[in-house]
Image (tube, rainbow, N blue to C red; front, side, top):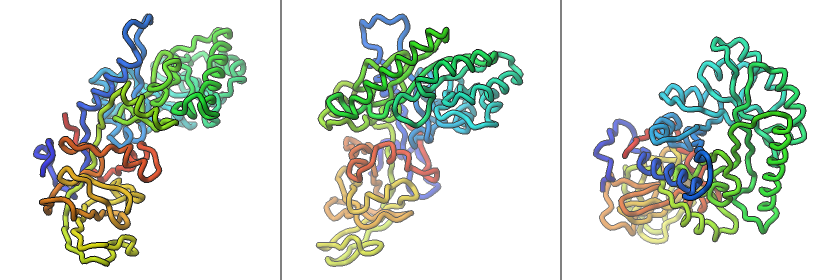
Length: 402
């Protein structure tokens, strides 16, 4: 059975592929923008949306989805490093690109050449960036965003270092702050828990630091705090711009307590963007009591029909799905059996009527009216949706469909 777009897809490689729905991507962006700009809110300018396209666009193809998102009206883009930013620029994206984990010494000229916006998370980075900006041909101030660590203890200057920051910035005549932000550790956890209260504490620290910067005469520019979970659950964190990651690709992050997930999904409905598929390349009738795959981790309890998919953990079928996960075949769920191999995965299709060699199996995503959401697959193996999406490797061709 062919999926809606298969006739347009040229299969010159192994029969494993990912379909990326640009229609679903646009739907999600529009839904997020409308959600954080509710009607009747008294704001001079609408909140901006910085689309996170790092990690190869959560496995969807970073440069490709960035180009589509710009066409759909995205305001900013977020990538991990200079290399990712350059790839986005080479795809033709003109909008502002924020380098979220900043730069290492020596990368400054490349940032400026490609008009990328760096993050400063250590005070000593100011001098390096200022020297590069002084030498840059355009001879205009380099714009950067300042990251403040408010409790995650990863990247960012400490709130108590705002005075030192201001003093060093005053010496950097070729730099100009364009934004100030922080990152939440537990924004998907609600307030009646220690982790949930941590987010409130982070907000308080951030706004205190922001006030200190303003009193020191520093215009913070664009203020942004909210990641995917905070977008869905904490309107007080939306500030001037929000940073959707997983929700942009169709999936809410996990919430605590879990019942809050349904509430968030009702308030902000999303569509899965990527479907990972492979074809059945072998069908084998296996008697009862026989081991299937490495180390006989699955033994047939009955005469079984075992299908072999041309995709394994070398493509993005998470190895942990062995004897735990399912795929969609002809609209029915079929269990993954045995250990997932690097290049193939075995599926028990005994209960799938009419199954045939060459049938497409959906590892996660949509198949006609059936849906196997990536977040459900991720929960089955105790991981997060982003881990599953980012696991899709470079050898899997992506096809961008309406």
